[in-house]
Image (cartoon, rainbow, N blue to C red):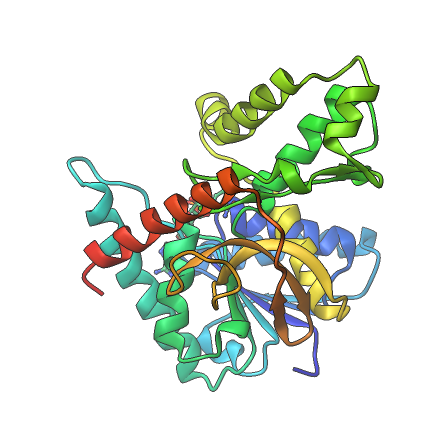
Length: 314
Ligand code: NAD
């Protein structure tokens, strides 16, 4: 864990948006790209290296193989497979799980003992599969969870009230998927609760909160409809998590984390909750005081994830 070395597995849109953002922000010393299509990983490394003259720091970027994981502090999983014709959601889940299992076997065979961050979807399910397969502590395996959704939420609120997005503190919790929900009871602008903001500003009403939630929930569908995939936002979200790890920030980030009983819902699942992240991974899950309605939503979301895991063959 001495070197700030990251290995990215899957050099598609998401993997390369993350890599590109890492280079632009000078977030790591060493970056290794792995893909089942090794030529693609090589081409991507060449292309990124040609930008180093304009990057904020010296970096070592190359394509590699799984031996490179041995001394990596962080491995980020962005490998993805799409649904085949006639394939059910559970078939896809099983196929994804098999791919993740084989990737994790290769990572662990290298002697890896760092942190694994999962971005591949369905992220909550795959983070669980990766954790089980790796044998690592749950503090060292987590998924990007609802961080991207939370960033979308903050953007939507910020746009509505014309206040800087960095002053909007609010979380999307639960599954990174259709059952996710906004924790409005713990949402603030600056230090002001959203409820008070609504009462003091004409720009936003309680009805707007529902619209904002729907915009966030449908954001991925809307982007995919227009450009077939989403990748810049998640790439930057993954860099934020990377910075929290390498800078030992103890930063609170909503990620897909193992619910160790802090919240009263299915315990044996990975689900989007706020957690404190530092150089060792997840320090602890932050317990928010959810209201009754939010607790019901969290339980329902966690049941959906658990039911999916129960139907899978791994
Ligand atoms: P993509 O098809 O562009 O890239 C996937 C890459 O994975 C390809 O380069 C492919 O060759 C590689 N790959 C496939 N199987 C592999 C294996 N066994 N070993 C190594 N590499 C392998 O897809 P994308 O748009 O980059 O999306 C990647 C994943 O990220 C998808 O699962 C997608 O749903 C997910 N995603 C997550 C979020 C989030 O918020 N967590 C947001 C957007 C996309």
